[in-house]
Structure formats: structure tokens, C-alpha cells
Image (cartoon, rainbow, N blue to C red; front, side, top):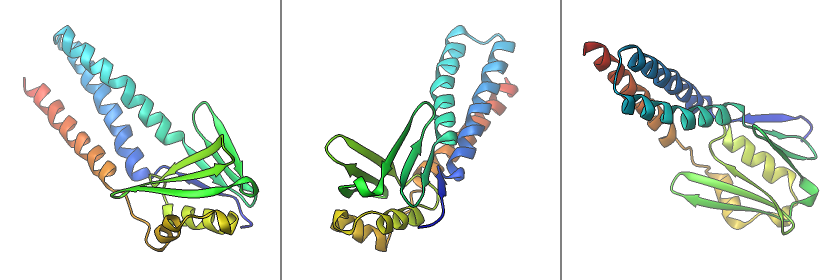
Length: 173
């Protein structure tokens, strides 16, 4: 692998999450302006915090794969594994949710989910770059037919539609 390649969380998930945060904030403002009950305002404010954190974390999370290793970049931390240090690449699959675990010794590891865009390319890049004896049979099998995870995208869009409905209902009252 000669080039550096960056993988991000699929934008088909990040975009509805951003809309969900914006719509929740709009509903919070409307409830305050309409003088809605304090309990409703507190619940919406309490919902805003985890939604905003999930959105920011998803929007900023990156994996950078270069010829020497992989770097996971998250909001307040960064972790790098060199491919020469990798002792195993293991896979855990639960339905269409996949977690890859890159191990480098006993204490150094990196867990990667299939929430990243171009996951098949990411998986192929990792398999091509790490030492051959470190890849488990499950990972080799996964390479032949990597699953696509769409449930989280569907759930996020469903939440956006539901919140739009709640906003319209708020204006009718």
C-alpha cells in the first residue's frame, strides 16, 4: 500500500444524526417559547446532550491507513498501530454488525466496526498490509463477503421523520 487512505463513518448515518440534533434543538426552543411544561423542556435538553455527543463523535471519527500502520482518530484521543506489530486480526460478527480487532501484543489493540464507509476496501487494505499468519479464518471468510450495515441509518432517518411529525404536532397545538 503506497497511499494514505482515510475512512470516515458513513455520511448516510452522520447526516440524519445532524438533522436529528438540529430538529431536537428546534423543538426545545419552540417548547420554551410556547411556555411548555418544565418537565418537557428538561427531557428535551437531556436528550440533546447524548445526541449532540454522538453526532460530533461520529462526524469527527477517522481511520487513517498508510503503508506502515493504522491511526484511529477520535475527538479527544488518537491511537496508532504499526502493521509490523500486529499479532492478530480477529472478527466478531453479530448479524450484519462486524467488529474487527487488531491486536499488537497483550495490551495494545484497536477495534473497528463496519460503520465506516468503504468498509470492504478498509478490510481488504488491512488484510493486505498485516503479516499473513495473523489473520483468522473468520476474517478471511468475511473478506469474501463483507456485510453492509444499514439498520443504524434506517433508525436515524426514522427518528428524523418522527421528530418532524412531533414538530408539526407542536405547531398545531
